[in-house]
Length: 595
Image 1 (cartoon, rainbow, N blue to C red):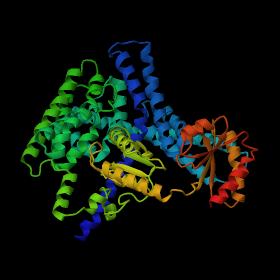
Image 2 (image 1 turned 180 degrees about the vertical axis):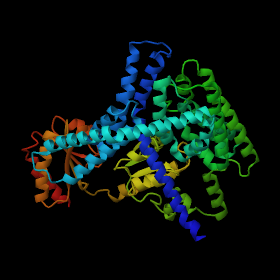
Image 3 (image 1 turned 45 degrees about the vertical axis):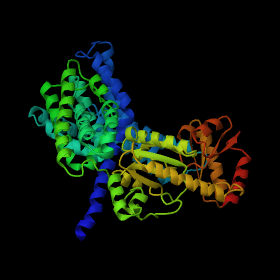
C-alpha cells in the first residue's frame, strides 16, 4: 500500500515533465503557424503539381522553407528563453545549421534557437551589475554578436550533421510505416497522447516539421492528417449527445460545433476523461481515418491549425478532397459506434466529476472540502470550508486562463469569465495564454485539472483553480462570488483611510530601442538607489518589452503615453533628459518613505 502511495506523485511528475517538454517544442511552432500556412498556400497553388502552376511565383517555395521558416523557429525558441535578445542570438545560431545542410532544418532550429537563448541569458546573468556606466550598449551588442558568431559555427560544423542524420532516420521511419501499411498503428500513441494534452506537442513539435519536408518534395503529406483529423472527436461527442447523461449529454451538441467546425479538439478531452474506456473509441476512429487516408494516398499541403473541417478540407492536395473527407467521416463513424457501445452498456453513464461531488455531498450532508477548494489539486483540498475568502487567500487583480497552446480552450474559458466578471461589476483583468507564458502578475490561474501541476510549477505563488471543462464549469460562479465578497471586505475596511502608495520592487527605464538613453538613465538611478540603501532592481528595456512585473516605469515625456498603454497598472514618471533629471532624487526620496 505504501509503495503505491509513493509512486503516484512520481507518475504525475513524469507526465508533467513530458507535457512541459512537449509544450516547449510546440511553443516554437505555434506562433509561426501563419507563416507555415502562407508557405503551404504558395506551395499548393504554384508548384508544378499545384492547383494553378506558376513558375515565376513558385520560386518563393524553396527560400521560405529553407531559410524563413527555420529562422522564425530559431528566433522564437531563443525569445522564449530570453526575450528579444535571446531570439536574435537564436536566429544567428540557427543560420549555421541551415548553411550546413541540404534539407530544411526545422529540427536544427528547434535545437539551436533555445541554445542561443540559454547561452546569452547565462552571459547576461554573469555580468549583471558588473558593467561600467556608459558601456552597457557596447557590451550588450558585442556579447550578442560574439556568442551568435560562435554558435553559428558550432551549428555549421557539429550540430548540422547530427540533425541531418536524425532527420534522415525519422523520414525513413515514416516511409517504412507508410510502405508497410503500419501507419494506422500510430493512432495507438497519438490519440491517448492528445487527451493527455500532448496534442500540440505531437502535431507541431514532431509531425509538422517532418510533414513540411515531405510537402517540399512531393507537394503533400499524410502526416498533417494524423493529429488534426476532427473525425474521432466528432464521433465521441455524437455518442455522448445520444447516449450520455446529465451535463455531458446536454453540453455535447454545443461541443460538436466548437470541435468539428471551430477546430478546438480540446473540448472533447473532458468527455473521454470522464469515461476513460472511450479512449478505445478515439483510437479505433483514428486508425480508421489513417487507414483510409493511406488507401486513397491523400495528404494536405499545410498544417490545419486549428483542426477545423474547413481547414482540413481547404488544405487537401489537388485531387485529394474526396479521400480526405472519406477518412474524416469514416473515422467519426467508427468512433461513434465504439463509444456508443461503451456508453450504453457501462454503469454510471456520463457522470462527471461535478455530479459525483454533488452526490457525495448529498450523502455527506454538508459541503465537501474538495468542492470548496475548487479541485485545484489534492494539496489545496485543505482549504477552509466557510467564511469570506474560503477559496482565494490573496487580492486578485488579474485572472489568467492557461492551456497548452494558450489559444482554443483557454480563450473560450476566459471569454466566459470576462462576461461574469463584468456583470459582477469587478475591476479585474481576465486573459488567456499558454502555461509556458503565464505572466508574473497573474494572481489567479485557471487550468484544466490535468495541467494544474504544470501551472503551479510555473507560478507557485499564485492562486490556482482546476476545472474539467473550460466552457461549462460551475466554479466560475463560485470564484466570482468569492471575489465579490473579498473586494467588499477590503473596500469597507479601507473606507476613509488614506490610500497608501504601493511598494516598488522593480524600476524600468524604457525608451524606443531599449539601449542607449534608457541604459544610461538606469545606470544613474542604480547608483542613487544603491547609495540610498534601497533593495530595488533597476534595469532598462524597450517600451514594447516592458516586463509585467515593472512597478515604476521612467520614460522620456514623449514616450510616456505609449508606456502607459503598455502597462496602465504601473506607476509612470516622465523626464526630459535621462542623464540629468532632478526627478530621480525626488523618486528616491519618495521610495524611502515607502520602506
